[in-house]
Structures are given as structure tokens and as C-alpha cells.
Amino acid sequence: MKYNADAVKTTISGTDLRPYIFEPEAGEIPAVLFIVPSYRGTVFWHEGDVPLKRAFRAGALYTATVTLRAVAGCSFAGIPAAPEEGSFSHSRSETVRHAAGSGGTLVITVTFAPPEGPSL
Image (cartoon, rainbow, N blue to C red):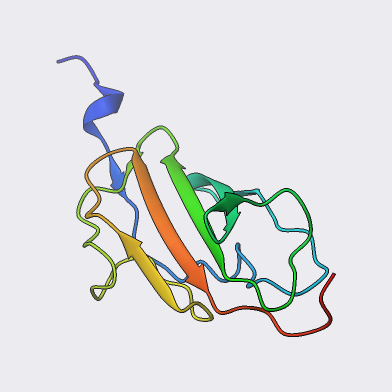
């Protein structure tokens, strides 16, 4: 029998994304990429409905669209849709939403309260 690496999959568990995506702080530049052993995360930030192209401002509503891509041998299959128990979360966000995991990519939307501080 031939070994099939694709048949052996490690299921990724939902977790708090806060260690990888920090909540907006006025004057700070947002992170756009993070890497953990089982997946890679790309973060696209929006201020309201407009893509963010500068530092965070006080009083503005921010949303992060996070695309997670599993590394070879890993899968998001079995992760329930957010905000269910066992899904991805963010302990300092207003809301976290994503569909149930089913393969190698998972898109998560994280909404944050407006940061406090001086407007830039």
C-alpha cells in the first residue's frame, strides 16, 4: 500500500486570535500577517467600509477580515461557525463571525470598538 500524505490531516482547533491580532489603538499601524505552526493569517483592515491605508484613528470603527490558510497536512474541517463554542474568537473584539470550517481556508470577520485617544 502506498502512503498518501493527503489522507493524514490534523484538524486545527478554534482559538482566541488576540495574541496574533491586536485591537486597534489610535496612532498604531495595523498588523497584516501572522504565522503559527498550523496556519498562516493575512489581515485586511477596514475603517468603516474603506480599506485602511494609514494608522488607526480614535473614534473610528474598524473591521479586520482575516484569511487563515492551513499548512500542508492541516485542516479547518470540524470547526463550528462563530460565535459557537470551539470556533475562533477574539477576547477584545465586539464580534467575530466565520462559517464552519471545511478545508484549508477559513475567512473570519472581526469587528472592534472604536479606539480611544487623540484623533490623528
